[in-house]
Image 1 (tube, rainbow, N blue to C red):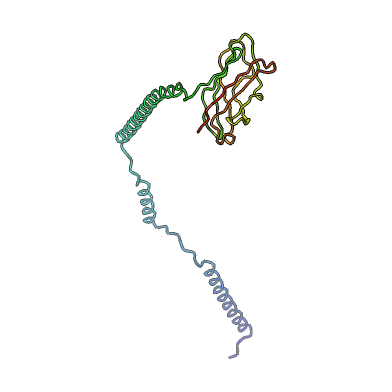
Image 2: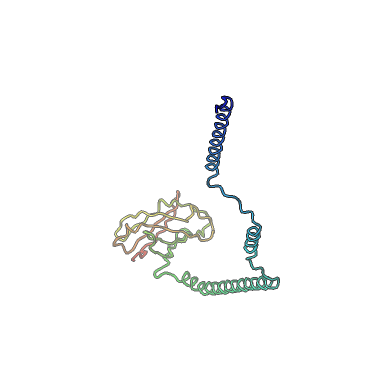
Length: 234
């Protein structure tokens, strides 16, 4: 039996369409699987939600809350502790201050006694025309010999001095360089006594046992103050 050409063509086209549809479906399924690889569906079960909310609630309720009376007791004990510590510190400070005052009172008479006690061989005095020069002490300090001197003018006229004219010499007749500090350039008439220091470098005093000072007024040079045999032995 012969097939009609139209029927044959129709069958061929139908087979081709089925094949193309199958190939397209398989290719689409393959691409979709590759795109969704590694993607998982969400867990939408009610039991898991309840479990997660319960665990979160347990975590939040893990902090223990204190009662009001316990909090008040803790605050009260801390306040009392701070008060006691402050009182103890204040008491210690007061004790230290009392002890310090006692120490100062005990040291003060000793210092006064030491200041009032004259150095052996001193003072050494000189006087001229109502003006006096007194060497109160001699001590070595800071690489120099320090002579503490006092001057006073009991005369009727003021007297001026230029201390660059101060003559300092040792027991061998050598002239020594010296500097002064605190001595005024002018002594007023009937004025109070003033104190100062004469400083002599120790390098100039090797094998020197005694020194002498001589000072005259400036510019009149009417008086001469001379203090001799000042002991400077170490």
